[in-house]
Amino acid sequence: MEKEKLRLDKYLWCIRLFKTRSQAAEACAKGKVKYNEKAAKAGKTVMLQDVYEVKTEAKKWLIQVTGLLHNRVAHSEAIQNYIDITPAEEIERIKFQATAFHTGKRMSKIGRPTKKQQRDLDDFLNIP
Image 1 (cartoon, rainbow, N blue to C red):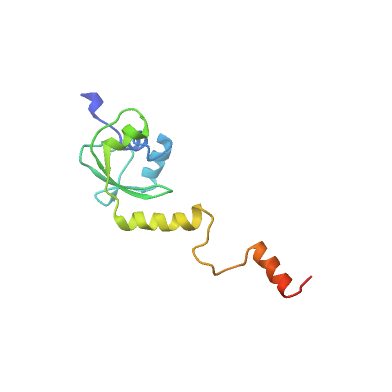
Image 2 (cartoon, rainbow, N blue to C red):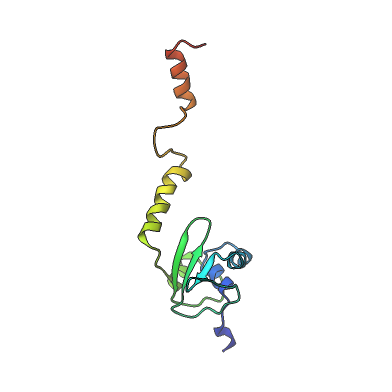
């Protein structure tokens, strides 16, 4: 029966939302993990069907607990223990950000010219 209790920070670490358990506990302490729209403490007992809102560096998750893990497992196993119910708007926002920041490409062609564009412009204007 003792094995049935599971801390929130340990669960978030086991399902691989955080790299370390201390990062999961720190996120709870800073109010980045919410249950029923209120900050959840790291020691909160996780129950099946609970819904948590978790803000990580990469994404704002909305997850529903479907299974309890007591040890960290492979990603393929971990994703079977929760349902990602993150709204579509959040997923679209992440994709939009990824195109701009993670690939190094600008969202538009407005802004400072690249070095090559600057050299071409200097050649065109005959600037030494």
